[in-house]
Length: 208
Image 1 (cartoon, rainbow, N blue to C red):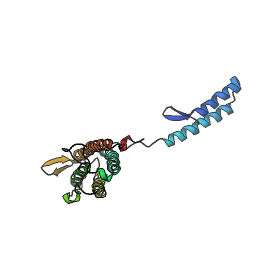
Image 2: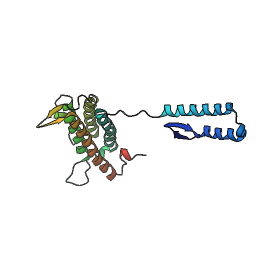
Image 3: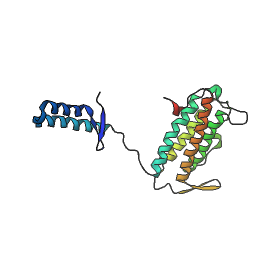
Image 4: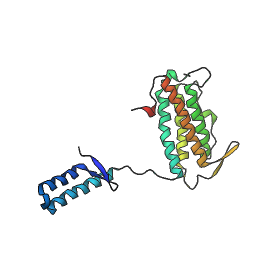
């Protein structure tokens, strides 16, 4: 299999470099221009293919960056909730801390509150499931909160992120509220991961 290396930002196949060397050996000082042309054409084709396969650059800007961070943490939180068996949704390592279901519901209620505000709406407390509800109900509530956040983050633009929102007794910019929610999701995901580990389950971000 041909390997590639970078030259001036492009990918060049070592297979074609080898061909160049072979031509030099066979032709010596009398290497024909035709041989060199054929070999260089191969290098150009290989470079074009490698460049075409390079991943597109991620969007840059305040809104795009917080949207990307949200889209990274979302599947991790959902997968963490889904990986825990229903029998362990009431699990808590010690008697004085939260159950696994309570942590999931905490993410749900926080997202409803923040993202509803970003959408210019009021969160409905009844949308958050009971901490003793079954796994399907708890996860349905979590997914519903992500749906609200999908709308909120999708609407963010660099032109609107500095708008000030009233969120209960405090005022926050859109970008501040959006990053605050991402930070909170990451914190809660860390706790969900710890609970999974205590049950011998590999967290989503540690899967191979």
